[in-house]
Length: 353
View 1: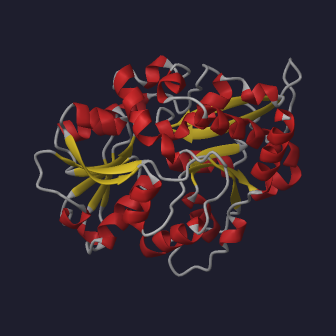
View 2 (view 1 turned 180 degrees about the horizontal axis):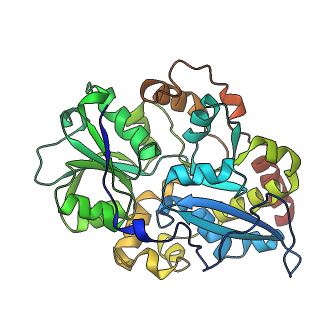
């Protein structure tokens, strides 16, 4: 299959930036204490302005990590592969990304696990240029499809949607155009015919009349219609070996993220946006950002637990389109655990009494 990367304008930037202007720490994987007696840890992600990552951003900005005794730095890397490499190298202690990467990594002989599920739906949308006669993935034969990165979850689902609608994998062309302004520019300059992306990029394209929605996976119902079952999105992933010797740190991370999910559940899209860095909605405009968030608030998982039957759906999808997973025996029971989030829920219930 032909896969070509489009160079993105952000390529000249430094590999990492932190949400609060802090650089990553804890690169040796040890639980060092900072000057305030907090345990240092670093969590990596890419394209941090995606709304699917808000539980992490809010956990830091609202002080939920510090309340748990953690000094968490967020490293914003340029691609999913960089995030995964940083986790496997022990340069960061956790990564925020889609659950499906845990299955791909197990097939590669690496054991990682999701310890809290932040999204119960992908929050992704497949879109086509408004000047293209594309009404569904079935119309993508010979077309160029933009994704955030090759090997990313947007590429997994982009491939699967086409294959599910009868288009062989070698008859669509995926190109990496990142997210945000570079994704929008790819549509504007006709570098792609369609693409798979998330909010607020979706709403920006709609606002500029550059694209139309062909497949909407921002809700559970839309996801089941498109993929034939639940497909959980963003989660916190850690190396299983590191978690086994750092259970207390993992539990504190999960406690903070669970508190963030609960906070989102009890606040409106407008209230959530008030806590988001202004540069997150600079491209789309604050009101459009609020509306985009309101359209997909249901994608967040207030329980933090893995949805029933979701791992099997993910395995079915990856077995169809990921050559690394295809033909391999995957033990999905080792790719996630609900133990930490169940403890977090229990502790939160006791604290509320």
